[in-house]
Amino acid sequence: MINEDVTGSDDVLLKCENLTKIYTSGLIRTKTVAGAKNVSFNIKKGEIVSLAGESGSGKSTVAKMILMLLRPTSGHIFLNGKDISLYNIRDYYRQVQAVFQDPYSAFNPFYKVDHVISRAFGLRQDNPDEDERKEIIESTFLSIGLNPSEVLGRYPHELSGGQMQRLLIGRSLLIGSQLLIADEPTSMIDASTRAGVLNLLLRLKEKEGLSVLFITHDIGQAQYVSERVLIMKEGEIVEQGSVNDVFTNPNHPYTQELLASVPSLYEKWEELT
Image (cartoon, rainbow, N blue to C red; front, side):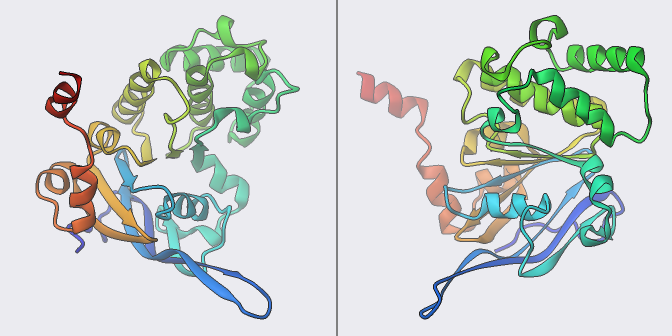
């Protein structure tokens, strides 16, 4: 059961309509698996929406289709009302960027992180000179809690996972992106750093109007960071709505199972005593 739909709203940034991705394997006996089935949802401008579900539910497949890394078998994706297939690829990636589970995979280990940051300016519409670039980088980094002197001039392996994730978020801000696809951005960083990344996303939503598709298997993080949540199972969105509605009054049995599997503080105390 679908709880909520914002189709037709003037402030919709991203709109997915009946997205389906079918994987086929085998030559003689072909086997098909649906990575996504008729997935439809919207993201408003300046909104964080969580896509939650267990591993293998199809969350990353949806993310890759939005990022044009996979072509949908059927269905459509619209950005600012325009089918993304009609975008020039540079124009599209100027507006849509991603932060993945492993931030180190986005950086060449043989280059200092400055190399990736400097290349971000190639996607900007303006062409600032060297001095302007330094000022933009410094102000952007400081706004996301990074000290430029501590991260620039270093190789990826010299930085923590939290610093690397902030670098990728900062890169999207340097480009001027409207939408950030955050695919399990906190799963490979330590618990003490996760709250900082989540709070950063919330702050950027409020101050910069950044829209975020936050992909996670962690119900607690989905509840903390987003206004709306989409629950995905076996390639389908089985329930969606406001965080309060879905988590306090879940309609679908799968959502109820996910919530029941979250340990409470009382249960933890009982185990310890």
